[in-house]
Image (tube, rainbow, N blue to C red; front, side, top):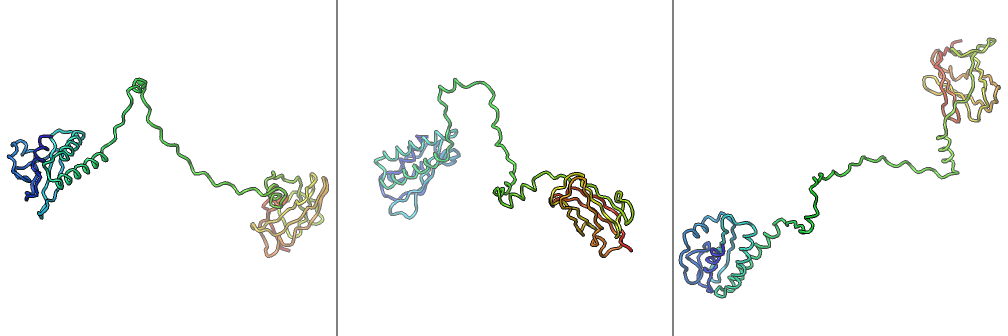
Length: 282
């Protein structure tokens, strides 16, 4: 390759005489004409199927530029081609017979091409020889994929400060719900109380405490899922009982229906009884 390059550069003599637009090497150069290159070199320049470098140089007094073309040898590696270009820079800069303007243009173009090729070439990884002996023959397992994380639900709302009504309500709501021990019986006027089978407008209710009933205990009447009435049991002691007539609102506006009785402990439903058939005729 260096022989091809030298032929190309010899065509650029130190003169400002007219130059031909041609690929170098050529029998037409700048200055004194050169002898024609050997046939094999001319064939290489004509085809230039291997590595190739081209640039256009301008000559003072000429409109058209002249092409400088350097071809690599077939089979030449990328590293060898870079060395060829570096050698071309040295030979160009050392050529005192070449016009300084031409010499600068060719050298600058060659250096730019070297920088481009060096920046695009992969960087080889070298391992110190001393470290190779310490490597084992074990099969290296493939790298494990990065762990996957599921979406974490949002954090719960902060708890209210102790001592505030909200905190007290929070504690009450989180306390276990206990059904008050009580018995509910039904009867018509002048009849004995028994288990409730159905309810009528004149039904009498007896609620007996089977244990001391805590405050805020009540029973609620629902008709069709709607609250119709509620009775507060006060603070009945074990063995005590209270008698109440079926609240009139339970029968308001209907002749027949279904009724459920809920037992509430501190405003929370602890048990639901029924449904019971309801007859509100006279």
